[in-house]
Image (cartoon, rainbow over all chains, first blue to last red; front, top):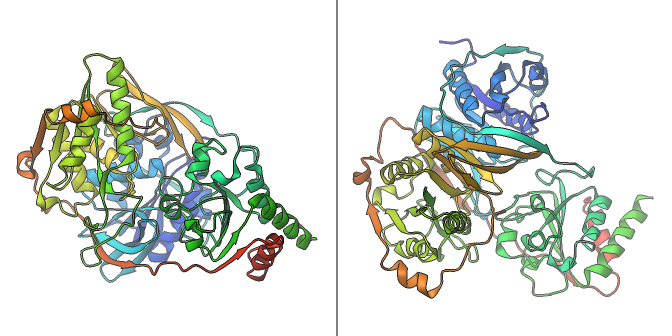
Length: 323
Length: 258
């Protein structure tokens, strides 16, 4: 027996290269609080334990050595130790690049089942169940483990619930290093953030531009509309491939999946791969000169016409209302 | 240098993809099966290295139903020297951990310096098989590389993560996964397609790999429910008569979206 709550959910909290708690921590702890008692495993310095507590963790186990320059393996070692100690009902991680790696290696080592890319968690009489949105939101599915705690990765930006803050302090976790071969992080180059726009993942509003914009200069029109609405900027793969915007703005099958309140597609034809990344949006608006563009099949409000006429008029109409 | 490239057969994303609502499995009859584009990029990366470094061996490895030989042949036609196809009815609906166990066993049997895979498949979108294989093999994983650099004894490159880009490297042997930032794959030419028919293609079953799909010690992921969402219906569609921007602004404001 241990002194952790019987319904503990172990949440793996990643930290950023600049030494802050990862953004995903708030929704992971929020999700855990819906189905049990959130216990955090902090992959970072003890000085961050207070931040994790304020997100709602009932306990904060600290594995400081897991945030060094060795990729993944120390975090897996820490998770192995934490899971043995806590005996949780489920293990939650972010479906981030590192979260996926840690989840996968840990699940193999502990012989646990994996539920990947979940968009929600629920508890039934037998345990924790993961909810999934499959094939670009065309299907809903649920999965669980045949036995033992499932290792669940949560899609970023999928949980709105936030847990109530606590004021617990960090507890150092005793970890035995496995000494398994691992990659080394030799250096890190921080992305220069130039805008105050919301992040695409988890944004409430998204304005995306496609090939119809025609050039990198003209893509600015999409950014202006996004700023008028306080929206994040997205793009179709065609716009990314044409070099109008960096790849991290790509919405779709191979980019980011978004489910905002409002999605405005500007000059995007709506290939099936693009729709797979945005068709779960609450309201979809499309502006395209081709009346037969497939994007209109999913649009709640479609406008057939020249985007270079319509979008500036829309922006000035929105600005006029603000005054 | 021996490179093993994992290639996956997936339903074509250019068509409608269906799940069988009773079994929860992909309805393979509903859409055309193709080699996943990210697998082709991984193979391209291996072939590019092989073109520049004599004595490189490129093996394509695939876990797929028995009837999927065409997909494996495409990898050979693109330029892989040989292929291994693991096919077994017991693998129908295999989850991430079982798939990784099977791949790791086939990789061990084949021998390798670097395993190269795509970072995320277009159907499962789990993105966990590469790291899971690395754990089984007891080697380093280097996932999500936007460029692939293989040198003597090392593999690495830039790795975009939230907030920036890491530079990572790992000692060989290792398992790496690449993103779609890597160059477009080559098309198999006629010569390649003809040559592919004569290249070695080894087929393995679970018994050959000494694996049981029903290992009672390992927990498995099971689907409890699958339901199709009703398709979205198109709403209002207007043609611009000079005031569409205004009308759209009204729509957004009326719906409290602006």
